[in-house]
Length: 465
Image (cartoon, rainbow, N blue to C red; front, side, top):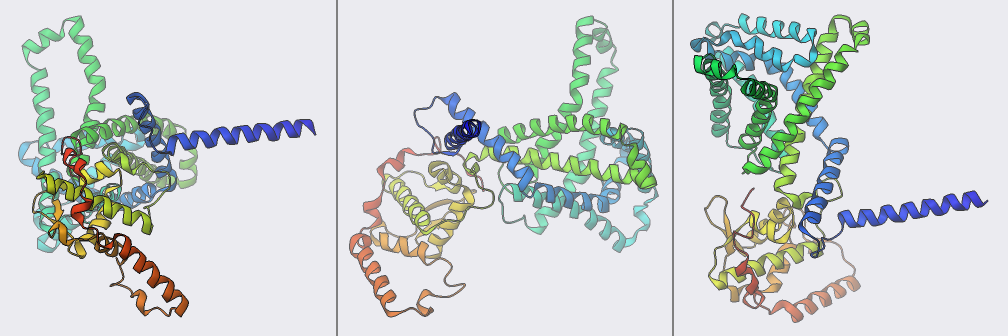
């Protein structure tokens, strides 16, 4: 019996310790903590949330969807992207670039690259006709659109760009991007062939430095590509710092995954025995899946670095209770009125997010409810700034509370249409009368927070969504 009691006591101690650790990680921040403690806690939360998103989120499903779209559009994608390179004499560089991407597949990667190159060479854009050319462009753009939708999902952006902007942006990436890449490679090769450069490379110190740069070049290229995607593709403002951090993490993980996958391919003789000639396709699809998953993982890193307010424990979108919605609405209006009274610049949604420490999409719902009742207006700036829609003395606390309480009733049904027993009606009427008598007459001018005038753009983050 004693060992069991001892084991039970140890289990209780471990459970208590884990509970304290969980409360420390996800509890309210302690203002007395040192900066290194705050940053360390944020790092721990970020790692836990990223692991949760990989195991329980939709990143894997999005990566699978991108694999399917890539298989449909990879040949039209390269055909359209590199058709422009024929005029620059760089068309013969398609296969070497494919080999670089498919290097983890080993000898099978060479065969896949040769097959794709043969498909590209067999496509004659000139004889496709208008309908065939449109289908080629549509298939290519569909992949870019799927990438944008996946990144918008990570960045909590519910809307895509207008059709015209998407078309011009996607084509600029597909047509101009390869030219810039191969131009940079050509300039580098030309510089390396200069006599002065060759003489400098003859020195041992510079030779070692060049070798080190050569080993780092694959990392730098992948990091640059990932950073460019995180900055250019999502339909929101992404800052350079978070995008670069996401690119560094994604690039290192991608190169490391390439080494691990190459080792997996070497020991994958069973796949050839089971799938026969389809083994190449299976391995190619697996590597595509890993690549897309790493790209989305890096985007998640960039997102959480820029928006630490999204580091909460539960998975999925938070659902606001009535108490939270009321508190947020009153806090928003108080901060807004305080800056208005002080003659300070209005705040954007991103700046309210930084001040209140609440995810942007949560605040946007409350803002929509307040705007729907004509209590808040927004400017035409980019991002828009928010200010009171009426004179502060004409907006009461009761109107603010009613705005968030009645949200969504117009789309569904009114509470007054529900069959309600008479005693319940009487209780609800007493509650409404009590609220009106207690705070209904308080105007927004009385609610103005004078401290809001000190919360300017320097202290608040820049607008994002």
